[in-house]
Length: 271
Length: 279
Image (tube, rainbow over all chains, first blue to last red):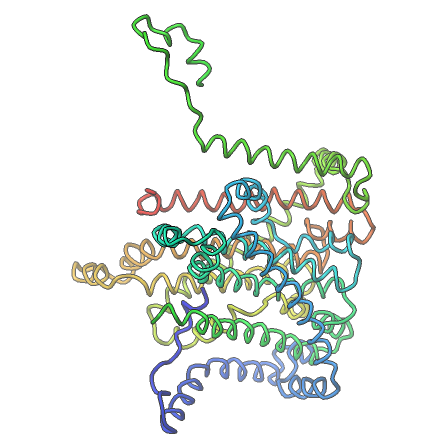
């Protein structure tokens, strides 16, 4: 969905040094509103219209960021957070695709699981934070389970919709050519459903970040969410702002990286 | 209905010599029956598994105990205070997000300056985990309702803007030109062409934003306390009151279901003229 807004500037940066320079200029111009916001931020802070504590200077935030980066605090906590998110999301993608495919293929599985999906899909998954807290305590496993549960349904629904939407002619021709049921699944259904599966995974990726940060706010002793809340509680606001912007940047980078990956994976479609 | 018709004497008219055709039950009805059966079976497994020791009742209290608590909460009115507060925060934040987001989206499609300013902000803001900004809003607006509602509005803003913008950009130029050539002014163009034609996309954006708003509300309540269903649940969790936690889950499922379905209903009502509702 975000792609609707993003209109990458295709003009310029084609080939050669001149084109690259032009492309760079284009990007700089495109993101200049960020600069406007930064100037506004500095101005509000310096003019004294807003309390210094509420809006620490950007320089201060930056230096705090590099301090945390060099002491290794930031990297350690980021690694902890990302590993939790990756574990939960990875399991959710594998299990979710399996469930989605089974639901699309077998009517009995569909009948069995559809009501569960229907009930739990609209439920805000963050409501499960106290439940996983009761089940698995405060350690890593509770957060991984939470992220897994939160990411599962988008993948299941994406896979199911994609697999159900496969052109029946493709299935029939594969079957008439003597493909077994498993082969049809692997060779026809899975590739044809890939775009839907991948967009389901993108939603899941976004959820995994939200759940990672919010569960670390509530129950954790490390990770970026814990870092933000402990810095905030300690009144170390420049550090808090630095980590918040850093987390936002990772979330953005992950989504953008995923979009690039998807374009790679689906290259065969455009051709 | 069917049974009543059968019991009616006129159902078997004398000239009917051949046996009446076997009434076949529509497969859709069977599906619905099976699905309801699945839910009932799950509820039964939950109840008996928890009651007769297969599952530790602290980890999963029996369904009947949870429902009992739910009944108590309904009787004392506590559930209405919680759900009302959560709904108030979620809907007000969602509403603010829509009131700001839809005009921004339309203006982005109409004006190059607005597009220049908002396009990068939206394309960066959309994929960011917005909940990370909560501590900033707490710092700026304190821990009471204001910061929660602003957080929700902030989270809802991005899907709404992006969908509105995409919807307006996708409008065919012909209707705009014809409206122009018939002398429509900007205001008329907005109400008669832009809004109706972008409406399906705008509604999709709202449908993405509303669950986002609910999630955000519950998380903010869990983090900041101050009643609401999220706050009550996290308190229950801290006091090891697992029945309370599961009662909260059931309440949230019901609330989420109602909210999502009502927006679907609104969509169907608003788009009654659109080909999509004729499917």
